[in-house]
Image 1 (cartoon, helix red, strand yellow):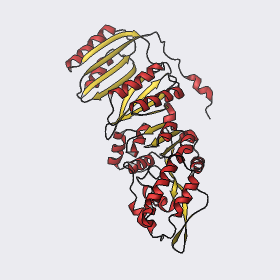
Image 2 (cartoon, one colour):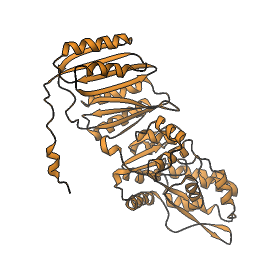
Image 3 (cartoon, one colour):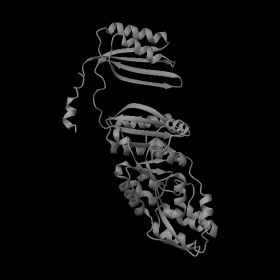
Length: 412
């Protein structure tokens, strides 16, 4: 078995003071631009040290950092001629060094808006600069139905930058997420979602209460509980008591009436394609949540169970209540079952009873949440599309659509 000593056989990094040539080309995109540039450089055997290319609305920008060559004058002449023949503006800057230094303090900063305004990006860039950090790359993750960009940042103190960008988010209205970059951005994850008003647009107990004619009473108690003004377990028992006497058959009616949040199917389908584990943890009722989970293909479900006797709801729940602490415990349990550290978990919720779960997870996302929850979560989403969570994880809209068109089979 190879030993760690094998790593020491790697050659040393190149001399940071060696002479290099930075080549930039910009102009209308067309087939063959990159080919022509590199064929011109190949005639003098130049070494490629760095390379970036992007096309925006048919306009190409290409940057190439080339290593030293004995025929520098010939190289610059051929590169200039190759670019100009294709109608490209060519820039050539001789200097020293490259980007070989290992970057530290790497972070991925995701900025989302509908629309994304120039002021949003300016405020984020200003906060990054104020930290003495640098934006190394920017890429667009989505254009529709929200515009999302990801900034690859280096030299950042992650907790401090996250705190300051949370203030920027509150001031500008843009949704901003800060996460470690590099390997921490890759690999398997456990994604745990609240159900009522997160995965679905409804509050299940309110749908049940409508059958009992007591929806207004239940809705008022639900709102108080979600704001953190009432103990969840006590409020749950009070609300469930109003359902006493309802036939068990109403559960089927409610299952049929539930409306998924826009983007819910896309989110779960894409997560499963990536091999991620998906779980639902709800203060609602397993009789409804399990059916939703089965339809979507989620891996784990945890929710309260209604007591039914002789086909009638008794107005009581069976077993331990899944409350704020219960949701966090479920997340820990599911992570242990999947062999994942908590740093590889994502929690999504909207109410006060989600706070412990959001705090425990590696990334806690407040989805269209109450102010209390937004203020304590790692990041918040205020757009009505649940699949926007994918952008926070660095997954682009194009990647999602390409997978859908290809009909990729889920890995999980």
